[in-house]
Length: 208
Image (cartoon, rainbow, N blue to C red):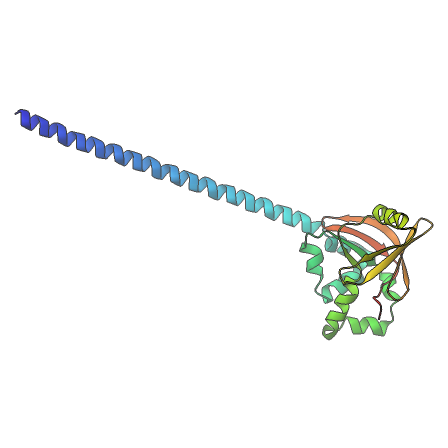
């Protein structure tokens, strides 16, 4: 009888141990599932935040500012033809863009503009447009200070690789291109999420 009692106790102990282990295993699995769900939720929230920031950045990008400015419609068409609109919309930059107005483009001979807008001349159009873009955000105050600090003449490199020269005429900032032709900033400091835009009254060209 004593042996039988001991056997019953032993069997019950095994069941209790097994049950305890099963409970621990179940708790561990539930904990792991909870952690997995929390990690997935955190990732979803992070992805949503990134997407919201991206959409906000693009809605205030250089390209968006240009599209919203009636006097820059020719520039927008040129950026699209050159397949640079996406860069000005999605690239974080920052960039400084010297944006020729519609009147500025109108000064360029029609035959030249028509030729540049042709698909086969896309690389030439990209060269012209990139000559109007500088890496980094340069406000008009920054530019004026640089001109003053460099005894009235400040040279800087464009994204295209060639240089522009900035000088002052009264309170106006003048840009001189590689051919010696000039453009005046007529509207400065149009702020964008990926840089700044300065509207100019002429199209500048690298030295031919």
